[in-house]
Length: 324
Image (cartoon, rainbow, N blue to C red; front, top):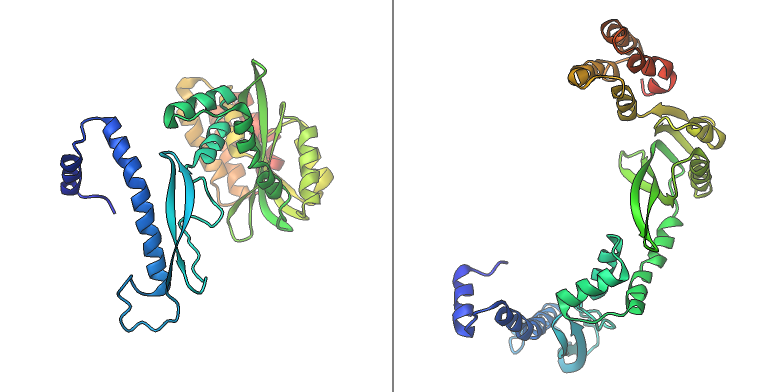
């Protein structure tokens, strides 16, 4: 619950706070006391009564002193007194038994690493935020913590059947050895039979090729995905053949967004809005017959002016119309 304004004003007056440094010092000094009270409250809840207020509570368990524990935090190192119970049933949830570093520094390092920051960048950020010196070795050890989790996620069991699977790439730039390079993240998104989205795979490659997708499709099959009803993909050369080689019974659905973008390349900007609006009647049609009828109307309206924009749909209709 937020602290009321009146309480904040009183805290400022009682502690003579005049600068950010004063606020930081107050937080640092209060941090230990707040943690201590939270731990005592946990034990109260576990025993069922507050200290010296047992009342009619029936329990053979009781308080049994404290154990000292040294913690590291963003406010420095300090000692707390962990409350104990006589029967040894109490397990502190606020700070786990073997946890000594509650600063969140490692989580911060991993977050910065995920944003593509270099070791030096991370060092400078942590130095600025917490006043702590982190070596390159420490940064590497922190980021290496996520590797077992990544491997576990990559090898997790997948559903045997997915009604829909979307496959596409995200292209981005990375810095390696002082050079800016292009990379492609191959992403496979499955839709479960219950209608939920599930990222099945993310793999990084140098650029998008059907050969690389073929390898990923085989990895899906080996990971337990035995059947896919529909694959939604773009028009990458060889993509359809790669899918058929692994999932021969699956239907191919060309992504409507990719189809529209391909057509837009042939349309003047002044007509783009109307052209796009007209095509909604095609891919929103209730049936394939109705969709073909709407496509014929578009050909009559736009075919002479933008023949390639319309023929793009006609030539790929077999894969564009699968969802009908």
